Image (cartoon, rainbow, N blue to C red; front, side):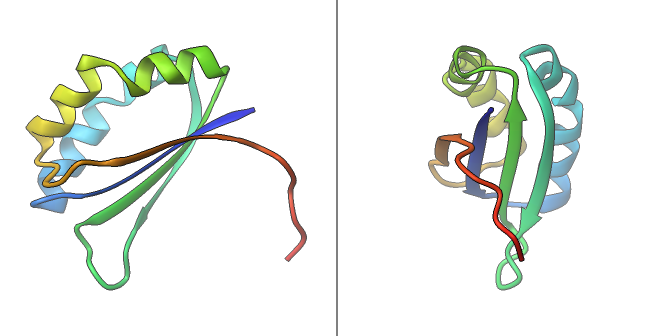
Length: 94
């Protein structure tokens, strides 16, 4: 199962979160199955999002889309995001 990990810093978390929530339907329609959202404990405007996807082709198309770039810009992403496409290798015990 492929995963999409995005890390970026935003100007204002609340403004960004509103756009992020509004973009949920687009993520789902593009094949996102579920996700987790994290904030840095040292910088609340540093965000990490991890999404499980249906397949690699869909997540690649989504992650390179003009739509995603436009939403990030409108939401106030303040630096170039780190975007990783990941393959699940192994679940580890605690």
